[in-house]
Length: 138
Image (cartoon, rainbow, N blue to C red):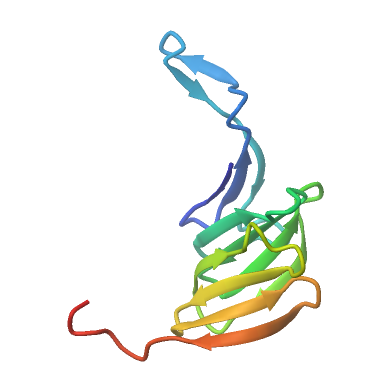
């Protein structure tokens, strides 16, 4: 499991293997396998708003943050292999679990646009404009 927190902490847990049973085995605790915080060389500076595994290979994972960055991490080295500087706070990132011909990250930022970031080239592939304001019925 990949987890992000408001204190800029991102962590990985193996939820299939518990490390400590509590209360007669009713509750299982899990130790953190890897952690990246503000002190990490490439750690986020503000809240980690999203995290996801690269769908094709769990050797990569992606985190988005309020610090305006999307980081693509190497699972084995916990080093950032790609860093996308966004125009605002990152609210959500997503990747297609079915795509085999591209490596795009859809990124939702506070500027009401969705940006498509290409891991293969390190470039922004497209920007999709969103709504300009809130609907009266929202």
